[in-house]
Image (tube, rainbow, N blue to C red; front, side, top):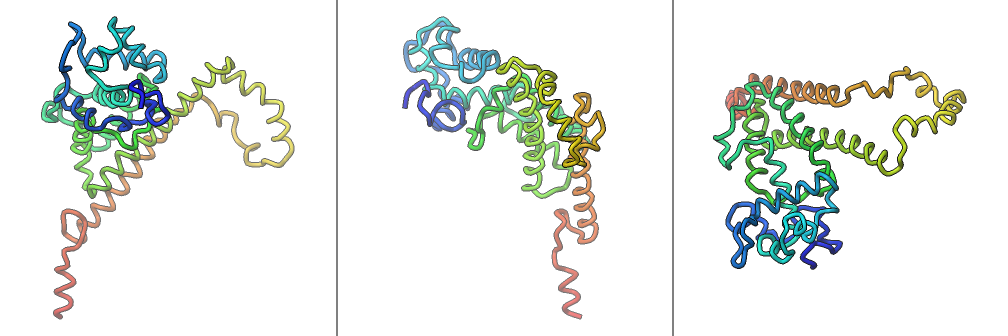
Length: 287
């Protein structure tokens, strides 16, 4: 494996693809300082900050140990005294940007109280994540299926679960709420990012792209083969329609229905988690 993560298995597109033990040491502060020969002023924090800045400006592919050494004015080998390579650096970068909306420190008690209403918490969760993806579009290029969990990732999950606890759902369901919201936001952000990338790569604006297809689409609509499509209103695909707001409101409404269902179950069965304790059944059996 090359130290710069240049092989197919460690090209920096998947978290947890490097030395997991070393990533964890660095994330949790047990391996911050090199053992020998550090360049004065060079720190792990500076390296991660520079890596995030390069990724924000030019994409994840532009991040390499050689590029960072240039940005930081140091020799490439000096960086390896702080971080093994790009794969481990990616773990640190991810934890860094996930922690940006959160309060400093690792103690969730340092955080301001979440909104009293879980609906407001979901709304804030979705908007915060969307903003993070806009500022760091390279996040959409990362496979996070096996994320190495650092302080920021755990702190974010702790705060989210605290904010959603009042929903009264089972623990797996609370995790599913977070996954559902994040998946919705990622899907929408990826669509927007892909559209912007298509403009950059082709040089065609969205308007020019659809104008090229217009004559063919008009003939197709007049053919009678697509009656539903032909009956759509002129504003169906309008850029003015806010799909984020629409989808988020529908998600929250769906969660409301589930919470109401769980509340009704608890009222019926008299238990905190909506399950019966079997008392009524045993009483009936004795009769």
